[in-house]
Length: 430
Image 1 (cartoon, rainbow, N blue to C red):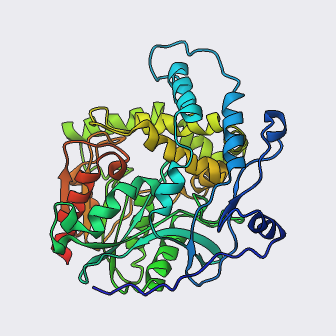
Image 2: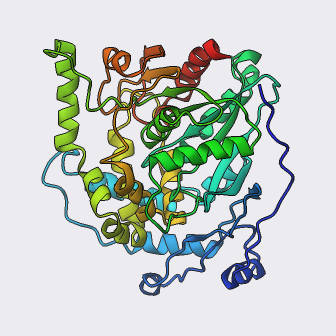
């Protein structure tokens, strides 16, 4: 396999007045806007991350969160104005008040506010400009010379945090129950408008454009041949990489195959009817968030940017409801809050929602693919895709497996199963 380019050490420099002031204050390579601890004054000033501009050169990235930003967050959490209790005894109206209060109290007084910072800084991070936009990504080459390069793409309301538990097993398999032949060079980018990637300031950053940007990223890192994986929006990006036959891509793996509308032929079988029924339930009772974000991302963005509890509830509901209820141990409160913290600190409630505005009604749909495809179906997924639909859509469907546990956030919920699926499928293509 192609070895990655050696990336020389670099530093992030801001030429803006704001960047100079932050650097002078000793806030490190990346600073957050100074936040006021008075809750009333904090309403007028958010603690969003300011990232220095980048060029096409690959620059090292490190997160440094000033104490003032965390003080502001705690003050906002303490000043939350709560709604009344729901009128049902389940999650059908959304996150129950008691659940949300408990998570918020833990976030304010029990959660380690520096945990996300440490976890991200333990992994090599970089930023580079592609097609006019600064892209943030994790890049961990394997020590094994014949490792297979792979690009992993997250979705919403996920982030690069989803993949932190699988990077070690993928890059260093001999230390995690695998063989040398199981090794991967791992690249995990943040979608445009997510995390520490730049926020698009113009229309056009939909799935096809992101797919092309990922191909540029892999080439820039020195990978002439590689594979790609994704679920949720990540499945959309990965599908479009395959659809466009981007340079260097040899195969893809999906944990949410985009098989909707399903390719029905004749009268649906009982199995197809059951799958269609579950898909209809999602459309009727679980897709309001997508309709809102795909039609009015700016409007919902004001609430998500101003209220940490609002942002947390918007994400927490999906992490809780889309995970496999039979997962053991499942996602912890700390893991859930790590992901929420990334959205809050980067102030990406609105910018992440805009991907729905760009692509949900157009690009996020079934595409005929003619390169090798592997699919892993997790039982807690939003709906159950059927192999017959995959066979009618992917002319080179080399792998289809339904695993025992896990949901929509496969790598996040069940890292061992996720890693095992990638090892089994891609072993055919090394």
